[in-house]
Every structure is written in structure tokens, then in C-alpha cells.
Image (cartoon, rainbow over all chains, first blue to last red; front, side, top):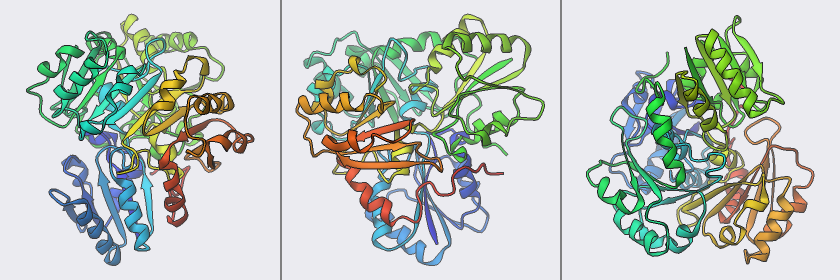
Length: 244
Length: 244
């Protein structure tokens, strides 16, 4: 028995790793997150159990993996993005260790870079940014807003849409220039992707109607998107397709 | 004609994306970085031109892509990690735009998370770290060491081995606790991977003999590696293998 904690990537099913796709295609149980594409789920063998984790608490998922681990041989736990970047993969791994169930971690393409890339934004760029800070906007009260406002480079906020007004207000109050370029990318790397670009002071209003999940990018690299997106044939072309 | 800027992932050839592998297998010209695995290079069709970028300056690579773009149809520029994370993919994209050559960006698994994962370190973990800052140690004089020392969460340093003593000294002088857990992971996600774990004050000495490339991780998440690495059957098991 092995449980494979596999990153599915940011949305486009072609961005799962070759190794991850191979494991999905040979598993006998698949436990997947809400944001994993249906194309990837359909790659599991016909005889495999498929369980969406929708509405399951983390403790229930841990428990589910342990129960499956007692009866199935090859269990794939397919998680959006990368299991170890805001993915709670460490918690699932520790639960498996406690139960004595062997596991393997297969990293995935994180939204950190792939979602900005899909909007023409490189998160580092020579002469523009050589530092990236990634935070979760889930609990904005826990952020050290003063420190974040003072940082050089690129700031990326996962799950930042709901609290965006509060976070932006904090950054501006802490001295971040209001004209700093900012972007919100909704459903990045999927066919439903939408991007809004504005100055920091205006980004919260501009992104008001975008659906989640969304990634927020703040920094001068956002200004590169005008050149990189307009002229490219495609960035992350042909999404929603799994290579044969 | 299209130039595909493809991320090869952190070293293990199974960690290229399914889409990236498909493009390598169908290209007629492949331009690859020094750290890309030979297994991936050998996946290009027999008739494809293969050019290692070894010792080429960035301007020469840009020029090479432009020249190939005039004579070949499907050019894959295979870069270690992710093209837009310290990969200078933005520069190559802008050069292609200037020349009117269509391109597409295919993100890759960045070392940011995959290399720590290979050593049993989740870069975020509930209750331990919900913030990650990534910098390059290439030019340590350009780092805002005081700001980095004051940050909460996980600090990751790319190309940080050569200047590690200087960076650590700066962090300690700026008040970072000397007992902060730290790790240096050399050649992460390859069969030659080596990891050293020590307190921040001792990490530079401990990692003195490790070969490059190496990733430095500083923060409480490093302490999780003892549990996650010791008990796991394998982390990133079976490296150096491309699925059929």
C-alpha cells in the first residue's frame, strides 16, 4: 500500500506532472479536491474508486486516506497546485506517518508562478524584481502588513479576494505607494480565466465582481503583462486538454 | 513557427508537465539549460536539433531562439524549474515579441516547493508557517537583509550556497534567532541529492562541502523534516525516470 500525495497543478490538466498523470492512470482509489479538473479525474482507471473531498473537513480527509490505505493498494490524493504550498499536504503526510502507512509526495506546478504566467506576468524579472513573498489572505488579521508593505519585489496573495479591500487598505496605510501595479487573476490557467490590472489603490474596486479562486499579484512585474500578454500568440495555450 | 518556453522542473525528469513532455517529444529544435536531465533531452525526436546553452550568454540565447524561429517550426526552449521563477523567461519572451515570433509559456514545477519537499520540508504548514519569501543569493549585496530577518514564515534562497556565510551573518546581525532551523538541499530531486540540517548559526559550516546547485531554507518548517523524512517510504521516489 502507498498513498501518493500528488499535485494536480493550477487548473489546466496538461500541467499535471508526467509522473502524477502516470499515478492517476494506475491508481485504484482517487481522492480529489474541488478545484481539480474533471479531465484529470476521468483519467483514473474505470475500476478505481473516486471520491471528491467537497465539504469534508481536513480530519475527515486524513481519516478517509487511512481507511483507504488499509484496503486499497495505490491511492492517489490529488490536490490542486502543489501539496506543500498552502495545500495542507504536510498534515496529511503526518497523519499517514502516525498510522504507519507509506506515502510518497509528487510535487505539482504551483499557482505561485503559473497563474501570473497565464496573465503574462513573470514573478521575477531581471532589473524589476528578484524577490517574491507569498502569503495567504485567508486570515488577514494574521498578516504582518507593515513588513509586507516595506518589502521589495513581488507580493503574491493566495485566497486574497474576499479580504482584498482590507489588505490593500493596510498596505497603503503602511506606506506602499498607491500607484504600485497590481493584478487579480481569477481561475487562472483555465478556460474561464479573467484578469484585472489596476493601480494598487484601485484594484479592490476593479476586481469586485471576479469569481474565486483568485490570485493577487502586487509589484512592478505586473507592468510587464501589457507587453507579454498583448503580443504573445498564447500564454498557456490550449488549456483543458490531457496529452494522450 | 512557435517557440515554447517550457519549464523542465527541478531535476527529476518525471516532474516535467504532461504538456511539456508532449512538446519535447514533438519539437524539431530543442535548446536546453545545463541542469536539464539527459533523460528529458533524449525524449526529443531523432531528427530534432539539440543545442545545450552551456556557456552561452543570455543575449546569445535570445539570438539563437530568433534564428531558429526563422527556420524551424516547433522550437522548445527547455529551462530548469519554471521559466518565470529566476529563469529569465520574461527576457526571452520579450526578445521573441520584439522579433515578431509567436511563443507560448508552459510553466514547470519550481524548486521553490519541490526541492524542500524532496527533503521532507513543506514550505507552508498550518500553525507553523503561512508565509514564504523567495530571494536569489546571487548578489547578496542587493538583499534587504534587515527586512528579511524581520519576516515571519519561511525564507528560501536560490543560488545561496556561495554567499551563505555572508547572508547568515547578516540575518543574525539583524536579529534573526541563531537557533532558527535551516537546511541546505544540494541537487534536490535528483539521485545525487544531499541535505544538511542545522541551526541557522551553524548551517554555513555544515553545508561547506555540498555541491551546487543548492537551495537554502530557513524557518520552523525545517523542523518538520525529521518526522516527514524519517518515516516516509520515499519522498519523490524513483527519480530519473520518464513515464512511457
